[in-house]
Length: 351
Image (tube, rainbow, N blue to C red; front, side, top):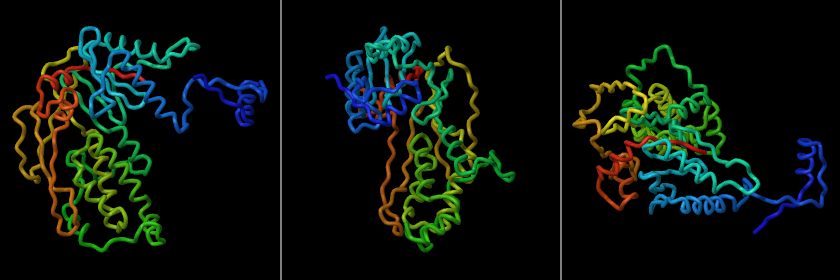
């Protein structure tokens, strides 16, 4: 159904300044796209792009509606969508370009000469992730995001005493007991809380939320520290602030850490990038290493507690690869065929 917008003085002034022409108040404008910020814009876009992807030949998974699969140019193609950003996994770049052309054609309005859809080539970032695609492995990290986080708070410059060879642990072992045993700090929104926040130089909840995003992306190694410090967000004391800043410094020293996905076979069209395995810290408990780089392993840690002082709970971790297999074809166990295929595919990006 055609939709039109009545002009107001603000729009007429903007148009006059931009073009030098004063529009008649009786003129109406045709609305060709959903207006950003309109309450219905998100729903209309979701329906529009979902219909386009279905017509092109994609089918989304049952539980994750933004993950799609389809067959194009004789090969299986995986697609993930974050609003209007697309990442597509396939063997041949020509397949990716063909799929993006099909989607762009259907997105193009009748009065547009070019599709509002840009092919960006090999994925190097997506939805907060940094993506390094090499001949032998794919690495996901949050390095760019962590750098922005540190710079925003003035913590981006390293101390001369710091050593990148032995980074700080996410939480000091000596501080863990005191985090629970010391008296709580002032309650949020009280003058005492605001005074403590001003003294520390940052908002506890703000920094916690920013670090939480890095944890959720691809830094499970800081999970215990994040979930522990989150328990005190309503009334943090000075030690909680100190520990949270310490966690940010830990991220500064390990900002290039991430999750590695090793390929079963090399992809010769991608660049070769040597990787030096990390050395195990002798001070940490002995964890049985995997027998090979592609073995899926998981560790269980009771970090999610119901009671702060009795500290009893149950925790479990499931490799996300199993979840991906369940989404794609209903398997609740690791499917070596599916996961091997997905790790072999280069990913291409469009927005």
